[in-house]
Image (cartoon, each protein chain N blue to C red):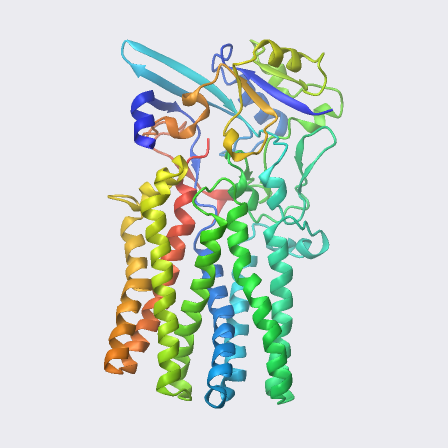
Length: 212
Length: 302
């Protein structure tokens, strides 16, 4: 079994329900996010559109964070999830530097690395990740990518030619797919970031782990 | 490349979370700088003992002390940068061998052990034969200890700017640059080296500075032609970039000024110019290392 995620960006309407559900389920501290939805506006008036992209850990098959972790705090579970042992983590931030997707942060409360675990604790109890449950349009499809009869496998089959991963050139083999994505939604360098994009006015950078 | 892409997409991020600040900052710069000195002086002692055995023989113990001090500075800054510094022992009890951090920590520990053996051989036992035999192994180990940070930077997959071949060369050149500079400055106090020996240190310093400068300029000019992320990263040190001034201050003090000063000192046999070159190189190295460490971290990853 190898668990994976697929987000159909045609369906996502940017309600941020998944973001909030994740925050609540995992008690993610203020100023940090395991999952976030990025809004990017494209085009010039009147030909404009807004895109929404949920961004979380990709649970890569060849995870740079797992490789660089000096104490195996980041480790694979049998189901393919890249999990984190916060009791073992020494907070070296090597994983933060290694993750090409910016998905790992230093938890300001525990002073250890943290990230999306696909709600591994819920999966262990045969429940879906909190973000999947919260999505009102079922844009998040989660399941076993090795099982051809799973919803995610069927979705990937049906959407062939339109399934993408972020930064495939990094060779990380993400287990997180997007349907309906494009350069603007998946490539952070393809859009301008001007001051004021943040949830907090004029606050563009946050301190790591509350200090340093 | 980046600008063309931006112009074509005409896309603007309108709502997102704040970006993280710099993760590895001045503490890691101190770490790299101190390690360069700590291993660099060992390389230089080995060279001097081979080429100028009589003059360098009295440097056995002082150089080992300098190396011990700087390697412990390196270890100190390594530990205090950990967000959970009192768990650093996990590296030894839960080692993960694919990590350059783990391999580096073990090698650095072994290196420290050899340094103390050198101190024992030179200060307590006063056995030059034992010292020289141990020094050979210490020099061999100093090479991977110098290089492992390049491995760590290479394993930082997200930071395209840091590539193993270039960073390896930069780490070795930083060690020879700072090691030769430290030896020149040390000799202002001990006054044991002949002019020829000091000139050799100056030449090593100048060649290291030239090599490192060529590498930085190569990255600056040709890096953006190969990768979009490198191009975006180097924007921070080009034109009116956030770190442009600091980058050039580093280049001038670490490489350009020392190179010119060494040439002038050789042509005029001026030892003062050599000392000035050494001071400039040590200060500039910190600045140039810091800029190269920070700029890839300013890039948004998602």
